[in-house]
Figure (spheres, helix red, strand yellow):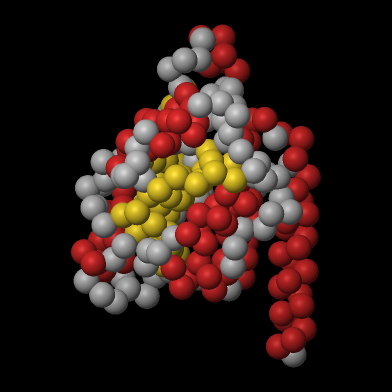
Length: 235
C-alpha cells in the first residue's frame, strides 16, 4: 500500500432539502486534519436552499445537482464522479470529529489487508428541537458502534468488489450494501474511537420512512437467497 499521506479520500455528501444543517456538516468535513480529500456534494433535487448553501463552499467542494431519485442514486452519482483511493460518505446533518479520516487512515497504514474501517458514534438532539420534541426522540447517552455509511472508510477497489448501492430500497440502503459486503467476505475493523456525531431531528431519514421497515425483511431474504445460491454453486 502507498504511503497514506498520498492517498486521496473522496467524501460524498448527499443532500435533499437539508439547508438547515448542511453548512455545519460540510465544515466538519472541510476541517479534517487529514488534508488529502475531495468533497463531492450531490444535491438530490432539493427544493429549499440546499444548493445555495453547498455552492457557497466552492471551490473547497464540487457541487452536482440531479433530479430527486433517492439517497442510493445520489451516492452512486458521487461514486461515478469520485477519483479517490478511498471512499467516505455523509448525509446533510451528521458531524465528523476533526480527526476521523486521519485516525482511520492510520489503521489502514498499520493493517493494509483491511477493506473497511468503522468507528463509534455519539447521538445528540439537534438544538432547534423543543423540549417536547426531544422527549419523543430517544437519544442514548453512550457511544455506539457505528456500522453505517457515515462512519465508514473503504478502499476504492473494495467498494467496487461489492458494487453500487441498490436503488430499489427506500430505507436501509446501507444495510443492503453491507449485507452484500459481508457475503463477499470483506475484512472489517471497528475502531473504539468516536468518529461521528449523529444529529437527531424531525427529518431523519429513518424517522420519516418508518413504514418502509418491511424492506429490511426483504433485504435479509435476498441475502439468504444469494448465500444459498452460492453454496449450491460450490457443491
